[in-house]
Amino acid sequence: MIATGTHPFALYENQVITNVNPRYEEFAQKYGWAVRRLLTFGMHVHVGMDSKEKAVAVHDEIRKYLPLVLALSACSPFWRGKDTELYCSRLSVFQGLPNTGLPEPYLKWSEYEQSLETLVAANVIKEGIGYRQVWKDVRIHPAYGTVEIRIADSMPSLIDTVAVATFVQALAIKIGNEWEEDKLDKPTPNWLIERNRWAAIKEGLNAKFIIDLEGNTLPIKDLIKHLKNEISSIAESLGSLNRLNELENIFNSDNMVQNMRNLHKDGSLDGLVKELQNILTNSLKD
Image (cartoon, helix red, strand yellow):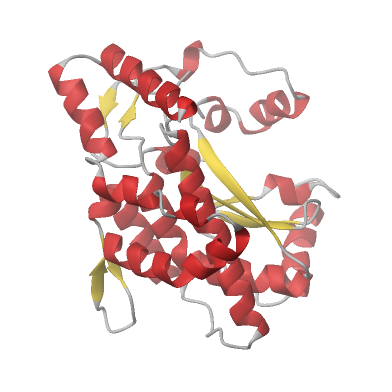
C-alpha cells in the first residue's frame, strides 16, 4: 500500500472500476474517458459547521487559503511513468471533469441553493444528492453539516497527513470565529486565487504567494508558518497542537517531490514505489 496524489507509473487503461458503489460505473458511463482516466488520489477534510450561513462564510473565505493546503500536500509529480515537471499533476487530470476546480463565492445560503437548483433543472446533477456531484476544491456538504476541503493530494506519510488535516480544521474554525465577530472582508477574487493555486501546482512549497491586489508576494512556506502560529491556540483548545506542530516535519525534511524525482533518476519507478511503501509503513508504526 502507498499513498500519493497519483500512482507513479500505473495506467488507467489497466484498472477495473470498483463495484463498491454502483455510482462509479454510472459516472464512467456518463462522463466516459474523463472519468476512466481518474487514477488520482485526493485527501478530503471535513470540518463541522453549526449554521448554514457560517458554512457559506467559511467556504467563501477558505478559498484563498487552498493553495497553502495544496502546497503542503503536493506529491504527484509523476503521471503514467513520466515526470510532469509539476508538484501536483493530480489536479490537472481531475479538472477534465465538469463541476471541478475553484468555486465562486456564494455569499449567502440562498445563492448556494440556487446553484444546485439550476444544475438539477438542467439535468446536470441529481435532485437530492446533487451536492455530491459538485467536485470543487472546497464544497459544502449538507448531509454531514460540514465544509469539505478537497484540494489536497493524498500524502505518503500518515503523520504528515494528520498534520495537514489539523491545519485545515483549525483554519476553518478560525474563519468561523472571525465571521461571528464580523471581521471577514469580502471574498478574494477567483483570478488571484487561481494564480496562487497554479504556483502551488507547479512549485509546491517553493512557490511565491501573491498576498494582495498590489502584487506583493511572500514565500508560501513563510505564509503557512505565520498562519500556523495564528491558529496554534485553536489547535491547543482542541487537544491537537502536537499534531499541528508536526507540520515542522514537512518544513524541515527534504522536499518529498524532489526526493521522489531523485529516486526516479537514481533507480526506477519500481524503487520509488517501494520507498513510498516504506514511508507509509513507518508512519503507521509511529
